Length: 294
Ligand SMILES: [Fe+2]
Image (cartoon, rainbow, N blue to C red; front, side, top):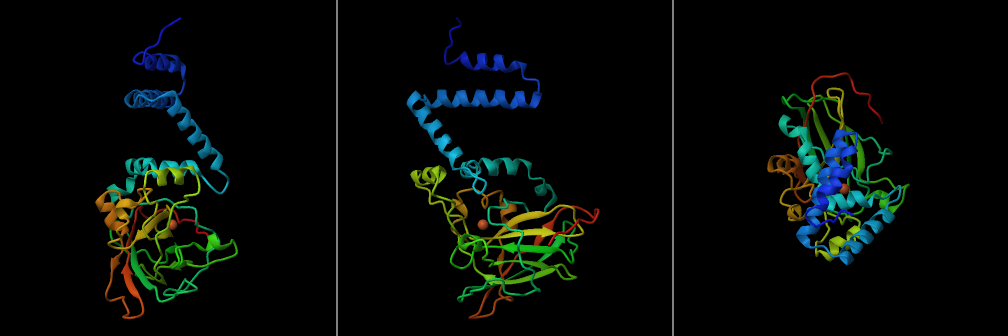
């Protein structure tokens, strides 16, 4: 029988997997084995510690349901989702607004509003005027584009967390002939990622706070571009940027700049509402008209 040492076992595994027919699968699995073995050697991982790791991943799997994906949350909180997205985000080269995760709180059932309408049922003195221009990368305005927004209410909760029949703080708008949109809303609150599962336990054990910076989700469709853009808008000077537990708001500085709205004095009504400007640049040229929904 062949004797393995910590140095030779890695090659033995790779040798046995050499029959893998799919070359990309073979490349990925070889790298996974090499890096996992290196991780065990570097940390001098004990059998007891590895069992703990397996128990943790078992709990992550058991937490998954059709409504909850704990493995995605694990990937997000370890920065792996952000890394994979950054490596393949083609929008950077085209100077367009970057995409981000859709998140669990999007819903098809969203009311349509006239430009400038208030989407929050309760405003409680936290009103915000949000406007901006939607253009292509050449700076040409994109008229009649569909702009969907959704966010937490001023108490930091999404409508859907209060019941499936509740619809609040979400709406569909259209840009005018100059590409401008105008939304009245309330300032959303930052909120915690789900902390009641094994990933939340991990985040708390690491003494991370698990709170995302306040943001408004955007989804854009239009006839002038072929691809839907899903993104998130942030507010200037949020101290939580550097601590985002899923690393969405701390990507490269150019990208980040485009995702942060600007305080806008002209749009601000004293003692009534703060104004913010958020321009959106969509990639893609004139293409076959996109079939719009809603
Ligand atoms: Fe969100």
